[in-house]
Amino acid sequence: MPFDVTNFIDLFVDSISSEKGYSENTCRAYRHDLKEFAEYLAGHNGDDKSAPEVPDALMIRSYMGFLYKKNKKPTMARKLSALRSFFRYLFRQGLIADNPTDSIMTPKQDQMVPLYLTVDEMFRLLDAVQTNILTDLRNRAMFETLYSCGIRVSELAGMDQTDVDFENSSIRVLGKGNKERIVPIGKKALAAIKAYRGSLDAGSGISFLQDGPLFLNLRNGRLTPRSIARLLDKLVVDCGMVTPVSPHVLRHTFATHMLDAGADLRVVQELLGHKSLSTTQRYTHVSIDRLMETYDKAHPRK
Image 1 (cartoon, rainbow, N blue to C red):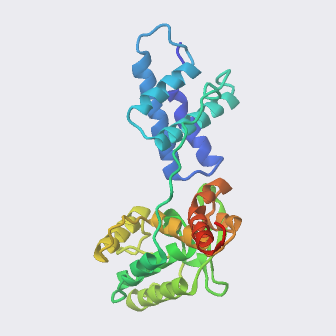
Image 2 (tube, helix red, strand yellow):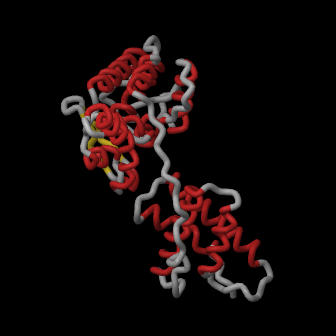
Image 3 (cartoon, rainbow, N blue to C red):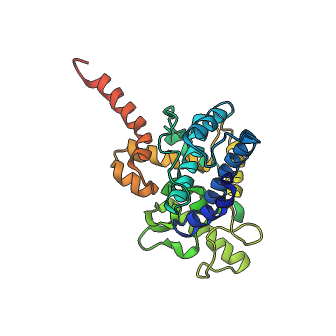
């Protein structure tokens, strides 16, 4: 009887959720990618009696060729990563004799320079946020915090009031894999949070001392990452910026400005919550550009 991978997808996703603490969004992405592979197998094999019972390396390569026709390299790499994790799980459970992805090479990636804002552009964006009403105060506090701390938008949305330590100028962040880290936060961001929560307390009686989300929607519930991104989109349009700016661009901007000012790469890695230093190294392009510019201007025998 042919090996049906669909029988094990839910078991695998449950395992990465419970054992590795992967987020709901990550688990959903894994399930989607694996089901897409299962659909490909079903359509590709059909009534082919010569097809192997368990997917082999040749079949994985065929699938990667199929993906190449309609996906970019980063997407292909992500889908292959999902397959690797899935078949590694099946191998560890003794459900297959060999891992068919062991011999598959990851598609060579183009070096992408992260999009970021200049210091002037970043200040212009933040200063464009009005502070006349409660929602404006909230938005100013959110975007100040994103830029001040370099956290992910999902981490911002997940913040509770108790995560802010005003005395020590730091916040507690729950990152990927439920890993907790402490991140410094600047005075302007702390002042913006105080102004927002003070106005919220005065207008609705929701005290800063109460448990609950730090940033609230109009129904006094927790804002979602998607809602925060939409609010940022509107701000970008309102202040007339041409460059598309997402919450992740603010994270890129934080990292770029820190490194450009001389911050140590490993410190920035810790602040961003990156597992691998190579991920953080993408942001060194600005510092290198600045070094080259300084060298060209200053060295007598360049």
